Image (cartoon, rainbow, N blue to C red; front, side, top):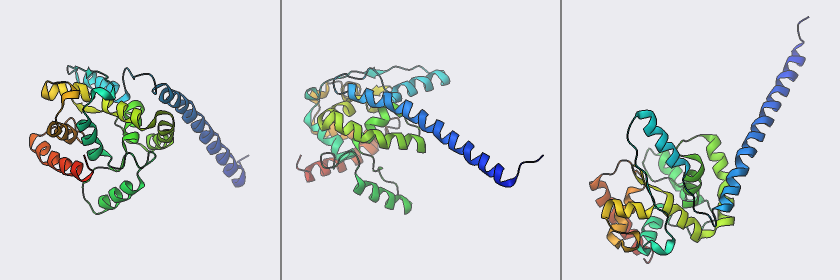
Length: 233
């Protein structure tokens, strides 16, 4: 005997609810370890990140050699000029917001609707969470998980540790991660000795670290230096 229409609709409704419940459970199971890892990151320097694992896997699939340069150093061993340049370039309101810069997001969205190309509205905290746990992929699920983890990072880490972690894990070129590795790779000097101009040039690489172009570095680094002056640095 065929099912009645209302019985079929009810069955589908319950199937959807069951699926949604299982998805929610899956998200929670993934979210909890990430939240605990963030709490641990207040004292423990991460040995690797999702982006680093992703790049290694990509090299393995493509059959290309992969050399990872990654040396974690304390914030005191990174020149203030480099700290200021990265903040000026990537998140000028870093010390004013609590993980999300709604003003920058609104500006980025408006610019995107006009067909322009502008650095996104992601904060250093958002970028740190993405680097640590999600890699470079862009999905609504990843953005949702990132959205819930950013406040956790702000709460348990604090601004100084967030900046320290970001400067040490961010990708600065093929296989180059963190300020110390980038300073040695591009200028053959430790991060604590980076000059103001060199700092601006390194910060200029961050929007597209795997497509470094000297002419772009020169142009964008000049804008970063001007922004640093406007911010009193």
